Image (cartoon, rainbow, N blue to C red; front, side):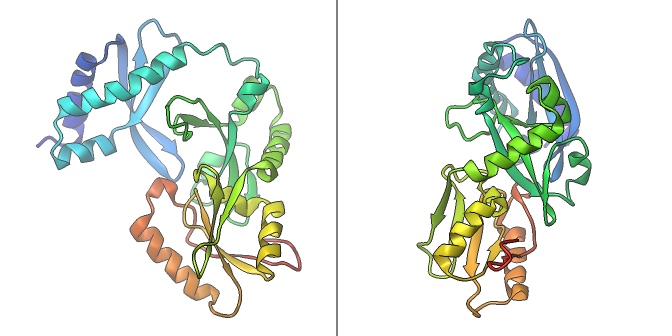
Length: 278
């Protein structure tokens, strides 16, 4: 069984054999992502100027440890990545943002404390110990779950969208209240809140407009449990629970069920109906 470094070198050789697109260079690097520092393998292709695509190598290594051959993993990777690269190569220049491309911006919510370094150069809106950020969906994959996306930083605001960081943050605030959130109250003890895609839907907790809608439905103040970046749980404050009990529960669930990159917070939040604040 190969160690991690040996696996990466072997993967590089196999990928060069499996990809039909000519690869100019494969670069291994550490990349700061939301919640994690990730080891990535970046592909730079011949004849595709300024285009590269990166994938995390750790999940591939874990599959190798489970019994998958490096050759099979390289073949699966090529089948998944090559269509995306060809799609990117057909994109028109992005130096002028059109209405259609602006619609590809979506918002997400992350933990501000854990991602403090990442947020230094990223436009964001603080809410408690969390931060609303924006991502750009490249629509690379058929399921359209925004997995082919990048985090928008300060430089993107000016170069891609021709907006100052301040103006871009104003646009992000508009997106908060125009998101299509869903309210699933089929569970007896809590309500699941997300968006129609159930993807990066925990931003609902930052929308005063939507929180007030939930307040009106429940008729009382409520607790908010951040089950992940994708959804929140709403529990009415009817005297059955206290914050400490709920916080213990969310910590246990986060440790056992939530992937690190999807983790949002171990804290329980509270929406005060009289003040209309989180």
